[in-house]
Amino acid sequence: SRRLPCRDGAQGRKGGPMTQLTAILLSRLASACLTLFGVAVIVFAAIRALPGDITSVLAPRGPATLRAEIIEKFGLDQPAPVQFAKWLGAALRGDFGNSLITQEPILDTLAARLPVTLELTGIALAMSLLVGSWLGISSAMHHQRALGAGIGNVVSSLLMSIPDFVLGSMLLYLFSRYGLGLTVGQWVGPGQDFVGHLRAVVLPAFTLSVLGIGLFAVTARNAVLAVLSQDFIGTAVSRGMTPMQILRHHILRNIAIPMVTTFTLCAGYMVGGAVIVETLFSIPGLGRMLIQAVLNRDYPTIQVAVLLIAAFIVIMNMCADVLNRMIDPRLRK
Image 1 (cartoon, rainbow, N blue to C red):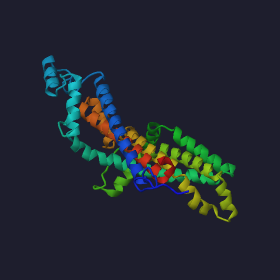
Image 2 (image 1 turned 45 degrees about the vertical axis):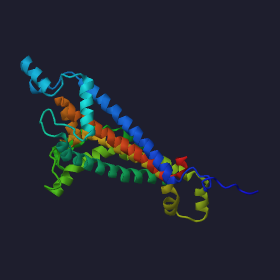
Image 3 (image 1 turned 90 degrees about the vertical axis):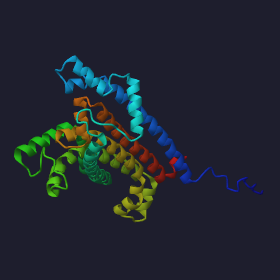
Image 4 (image 1 turned 90 degrees about the horizontal axis):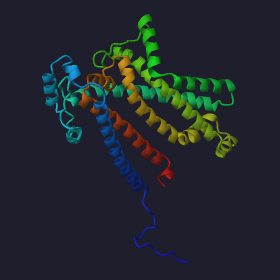
């Protein structure tokens, strides 16, 4: 029988891989915009529901007239929808306003503090990926040895169950009391003293990475065990492939999707977890700025900081979706 030609001259394809990825990306971008708008509305309403306002910080014992002047100066006497509309319109133009406390542009403050948080998060994420993946893969590759597998499971569970503030408090006590060679409570920039900077960043980065190490270890172990149970692994063994060859050629590429997903989840968690770690170790980053803004009822700074953290998490999730579909073409359907 003859094959009838398509009207467009093609073979009836619905679109190539790049067309599918573009459609997915556009869909995720639309979803991200709606998510960030919802975050902005919730944060705007939540911070104004807190007890007290800016006058309790700037004029705690001032007369009523002074309090009224402060509220009118910052436009807090206007209806909440009007305040939100003005702030959102300015934010869309790239104008995030000034801090109510310091009267400095919020963008200037972010430019100074955001690199600190990104550096801390990047180091902690690299530690989590390297140590956790090695621990999980080693435990899975030696799963027939009861001792090695048991130690890997216990260590992973223990790391995931320790809260950041508990571990950080313990490290602060040990290193500040006994002086074990690392800087505690004094942040040193890399431009000032590189060696001193490394000594100051080790403890907070390790504290932030502990949960990620456990999560990567569990994910890697379960993914490797799932691959080892497949029939093609038995075929590879019968062909005389060594465990390292099987790991390189068959296991690593098949565990890429769960590892990418775990990577993005850990990245989002660490940016949020930096709020606690930076406050605990007195690090001048985005997280500490957010805590200070909440205590001072600095509304514009709170809104920008939370929206920035939410945008980072949304972007990481969107990147995970796109990367997973690039790794496995079956997910594009």
